[in-house]
Amino acid sequence: MVKRTPKQYDCNHMNHTILPMPLQELLPDGLRQLAGGALIRKGEHVFSAGAKPQWMFFVVRGEVALERSGAHGEHVILQRCRGGFVSEASLMVDAYHCDAIALEETQVIKLPVAALRAELQSDPIFSSRWMRTLNAEIMRLRMQCERLSLHSVQERLLHLIQTEGMAGRYPIPTGIKTLASQLGVSHEALYRTITDMKKHALLDRTAEALILMPRNEG
Amino acid sequence: MVKRTPKQYDCNHMNHTILPMPLQELLPDGLRQLAGGALIRKGEHVFSAGAKPQWMFFVVRGEVALERSGAHGEHVILQRCRGGFVSEASLMVDAYHCDAIALEETQVIKLPVAALRAELQSDPIFSSRWMRTLNAEIMRLRMQCERLSLHSVQERLLHLIQTEGMAGRYPIPTGIKTLASQLGVSHEALYRTITDMKKHALLDRTAEALILMPRNEG
DNA sequence: CGTACTTTTGAATCGCATCAAATCTGGTGG
DNA sequence: CCACCAGATTTGATGCGATTCAAAAGTACG
Image 1 (cartoon, each protein chain N blue to C red):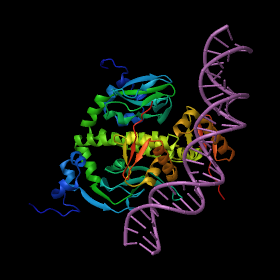
Image 2 (image 1 turned 120 degrees about the vertical axis):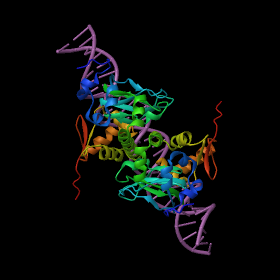
Image 3 (image 1 turned 90 degrees about the horizontal axis):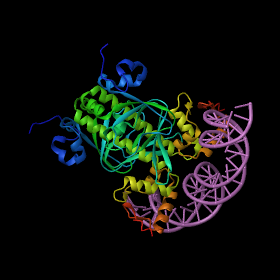
Image 4 (image 1 turned 45 degrees about the vertical axis):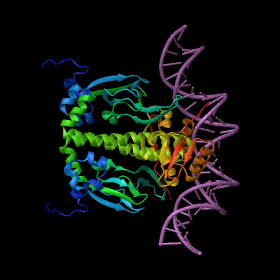
């Protein structure tokens, strides 16, 4: 095999291991060549607000939170990402508009923004697929707005499980505090709500997930 | 001038009047030919959740709200649109995921979805511009999520004026009740907050807009 | 075994939703 | 011009649910 310019990852060789299926299907060959990997430790920034986007990040394993921080250290989680691209919107923008922080040890794949942009220009199929991911992002965000418009913690939690869970099951791999921040409520309130719902047999909680109980109304 | 197939609007002739500048710049010639117009009365649906998108709507004048309705008639305004495309995300989707309702008499321009999709495939420049609008939408939605994560009415209102207003000025053409719904608070609470803020010289209110007063802190 | 963090419970307080009612407004028709 | 109506605006009172502060118990990790 021909020796190639060394990269952070030799993707030609490792494609089948480091590129997850959805990314395999999405990316044209040319871009796959340029993909690199990175491991981000818990608490570290993937990128920071104000910085110029150089890479597009795809989360393979772990979890990244997009957050914005106010002047006083309070921070709002705008979105959590456990798989797929982080901040697709940053592709066409000169500076990030929020922070991305690893909530646990996280494996990402990096794609150079310039190459990605070029590929979008020249490959209509890829462009179309990319637009689909943007559309999905928009709908997810609209869902989140709807959720945050609900007034009680229980309503928000139910909405989350119903709209983002799978068959009434919603994973909570990074804990309740993270989830509370995502729902825009205090962690105490969320703990209490979960306890109450368990007591009323509306919800079950395992270490990894929240599970909605089927309603057996008379 | 050559006689053309009659359309709902003769855009060749009326381009400069019915197509607003941002749309002029965004759309390729071919699509401009296919643009039609429509006038939607207050309270009427532009489209409804579940329906298959046939047209992409661009608001020229008036106001459209994207809302989702629960089972009991309660409705949440996901977004208000006073200019520009409504629900860009619906372009790649088989069914609308929310309702679009005119909050006042509204002038829109309609573009056939099929032609728009085709143009996105064949025109990389247009495709790139369209992606930019999607990105802007994503950022606006993230802002709204951040806003809805704030706990007090005053914080939400300030955030709205600061992030979506121009130079501390935010137009309220369709009234306070609409604004309250957008902020996810009751209209009474919003009225009271505005009154309080006026009393404390934080805010001024005219018939058309809310205006943030500059803080003269010691 | 100590440290840091999460989970849990408790109590006090506050802001908002809600219900109610009065006033104001613009528009319509007699 | 007035009577009337539908909405919007405004004020009031009440109760609930969440925030907040506090502290204890549990858990992971070196």
